[in-house]
Length: 252
Length: 305
Image 1 (cartoon, rainbow over the protein chains, first blue to last red):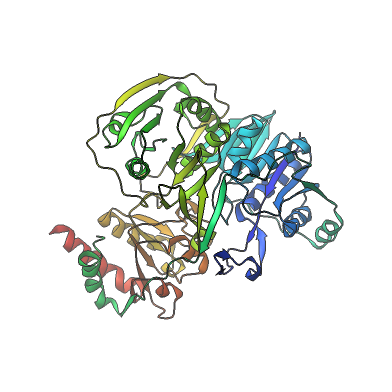
Image 2: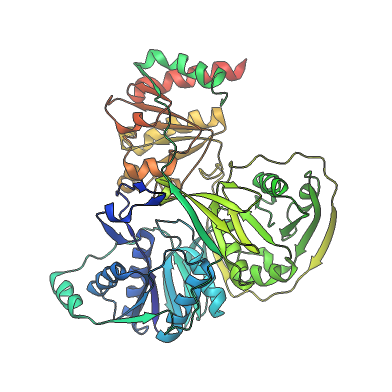
């Protein structure tokens, strides 16, 4: 038993992203945070722990800076911290999932929680990918999880609407933003977290070959600038604008 | 390619997936989970074969069970799906099952498998070179749809697969209304709408245009009546409609990230300095109370002609 929560460190959603020399200039990003959907995964992992379901093991894969989100997780109640240290930014999804699932195996957890997608790539490949790699079940876009008699009950936004589903461990849950209030760390939590050891694992430790990525980044660029728009004042301009949308833009 | 369905019929993005695949070349097989839309898929021009995969496991959504059922039937160098929430989920587990890398939310794809995709919610664009075999999900409205006129062979395959995720009860049906991620026109409201009940005026415009209604994060966070499923922005949905109408939305960077790639943007805001005007093709400085009635009247006029 135990809950592994997968956390990714991303630029704060208010961060400006600049590009130089065909690459996003990471050095100019001043604030890195835990990816927003992962915060809901963490909150639900701690709630599950409070029902007596083993320890919460926070796992993050990334460069040295990523350890910060593990310490943040410890401040609100994560028991064990694992940092999978990677310095390359061009891991393909199979490699990332390989590293994370090896770390989950190492943790011994039979429940995995993560955000439905990370706020940098917005991909959403990790949860279902890790589930497939580990042979776990998977429930996506979950907003709430509870457990009774060894059966998990989860609220998810599925293709046919909002549903309550049942699933048993071993299982991966990926989280959407819900009504769940996120807990904030208190001073004692922050102090304790600073002393919490972080177990660092390398790709070699986990036995995952990260040398031959199937994906290579050719370039990054800024989104194309739009030509300056036209601005009108007052509601009397509305009919003209509607005409332009119809006749010039052809969109209505 | 994995077809996409909505409300028990083929979703139009399936023709866009075929269009994208045709531009790369090779023979195209469409896999229809649960057999939904297989006849329509066979009529899309360029499709060589349709595999209608039928079985009880497709009654509810369980990505692992679906992936186990579909993966053995998928051959080829390139697996495509829509980048809808379900499309991404399913192709991720199919790719992992087949041990292939997956690249999500691609908006441009060349013959040489150079893929373009927005990252940081559209604050930057990434070009990646992918080695095949691989899996790719494509963003709606980014690729030219293939025409009708095909007449592909349909092969029916019955599968039997245990599901591990059981639906206990439906809490709310998927909205009757169009979702922002599927719509070609979106009208979104922000906190400037003053009260969630005022979104009824946006729905009125949406009904005239066949549009979806969205909201800014500020509106979703402020009012319980506005669900997160409507949120456009970095922690909501990233959208690329033909027309995005922002009403009472100031244009926080969080919001702009989710909608700036829209083809045309119309902003209505009473504050002439609002950042939303910086990305708008057409900006109208007015309160929504003044502007929306005129907008409704003019669109209704056009529509009745």
